[in-house]
Length: 300
Ligand SMILES: [Zn+2]
Image (cartoon, rainbow, N blue to C red; front, side, top):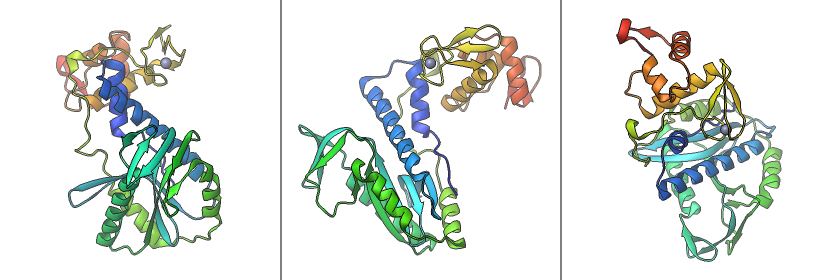
């Protein structure tokens, strides 16, 4: 059982907003960090994908114990243990000093080991509540080859970039047989996943202020029409069929404004009036259910 890693809700929203408005300096940094973090997780997925043994790999879980949410980048279920990985894509020289985490020369960063301790303890609580008895192990995993860590105690639960391949090999050499209890555990965890945390801080935005354009799925710049049935990104030259362009734009619209009705006119404006109303109506009619009639038609 392997589950692909979806783009996290926060990053999805930030991508759309970054293309359609000017973010503040702090918001822009949050966006860059979210993008970088996700890239690191995908890199780690490339390694876990190669595991040959009987394991369940669950990517990105947002779980809740009591009123506390916790997010786990990668969870691997083995015969004898459930292992959680906090994946970091940090770059540069870092060091630890009295339970604090710094980047050279001396900029304090949120300590990923504290985060790991917290997540591990919450995961144990959750498993206990659910009645599963399995050992929990946890690791902070640094995936960027440009990362180094100084003054790390020997017993620190860390996997450094230079250890990653060996760690995976060792893990793969341990015999693992999974049974129906493991399967039930994996299914239970997936079923408890939340799409978004109510504590996620997103930039404030409103419809009027956002740019009405078609955005490129590759580089998030704007796209223009190419012939009758395609769009092209002038920045990265990516070419996309018109149906897919319209459907992505509808997705972005729904993501940002879930309460707004989808109408031909609304999507036409949202797409910067680049694609004709006729095409938009055809796409909406093809992929969505038409509700109402005349000028009150909308799509679901
Ligand atoms: Zn592009």
